[in-house]
Image 1 (cartoon, rainbow, N blue to C red):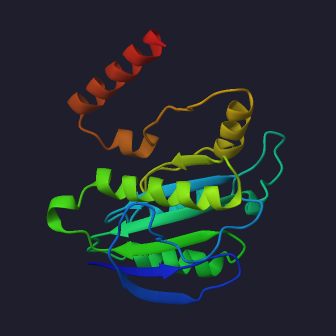
Image 2 (cartoon, rainbow, N blue to C red):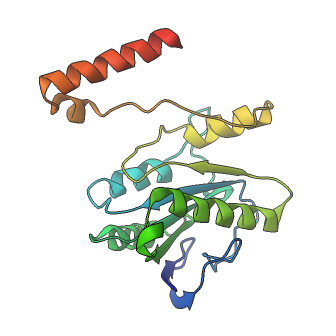
Length: 203
């Protein structure tokens, strides 16, 4: 059994608690998707309390390719907070209550030890995102990031554009925060910069 504690965004901070056995395509999020939702952002979370707020701020402040705010009803965010020992879930719930127009769904679960890994969490999220998008239309876009990552302001808009132009899959680069890079010991920092240079030349 998985303990699920769900909080829905979009104008509501109501909570629902239930015990379910998670099977493929069984709902994790009880709140229906918004009618105009095109993109489902999925994020597996495990002990991300130090970075999660920054991750959510980046998603809440998405802009279109003309620099205008991206309509929030075009995307939703599902966090699967699994097997956490920190305050990640509380931080996410607080953020949802402070941004009621953002479709942010927080689902807290405890996976059995053999399944408590990011692959399982992301698969559950992919299944849920697919189920929700299919409720609205015959297609949609699932995008995934992590709880220690800040996406670019045009991340969703650029992905929408690429898909509209015929792309089936969109990927991006991950850049290390300059402050984190500066905190590395010299040998590790040199190895990192050498790897970045190699990948840049290959590209």
